[in-house]
Image 1 (cartoon, rainbow, N blue to C red):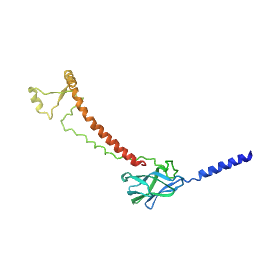
Image 2: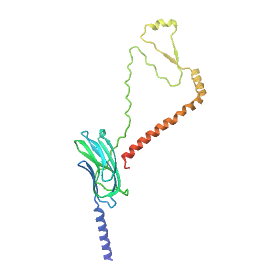
Image 3: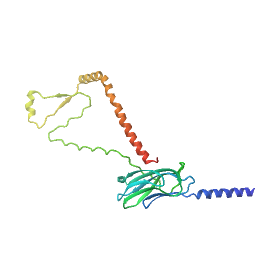
Image 4: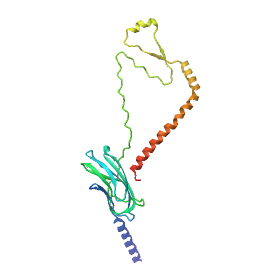
Length: 242
């Protein structure tokens, strides 16, 4: 009984040693090559997704695949980062050069990993830090805010009125024209009457059939939304592994 227990303990110890002996891979950028070093996986390296981070003194000009890897890159020098991802079905082990990266300028380049896996899709352990930042997506710059207008002396800024409410302009009588001629500016008085609102409501109810013609423009808006979603999906696919 003691011999069986001892053999079981020895077997468990051997298994623990064999599991801990598996080395974690490291992604390096050496001599213009992105290398996944120390791949100790029985299936071999099948895919990677890394981010290069650098300062304003350095920039990446080109990225090309090596060792049969199909590589896609997203160079964003203005943001100080380059995303590189690639896949392969060869299942290479050891030190595997996966891409040729041309860097110009000076300054350190930090390699962080988003994903590293074998040819079957299982994750491979790595020693690099995990990328925890955010990747900016292409977009249009925000519109410029117009500067507030400065009113001229003597002018009166009219108060804003709700859209769709008719306005009635009251002009001074002929006898009052002489009194207002000497002033720098005139003030427009707007009044809203209940009768005008009712007439506007009845006019809108009569024009309701015409709103069906305005709905014909909806497919164009939906088409532009689909094109925008397709562009965003394309950027996401480039950022992730293909």
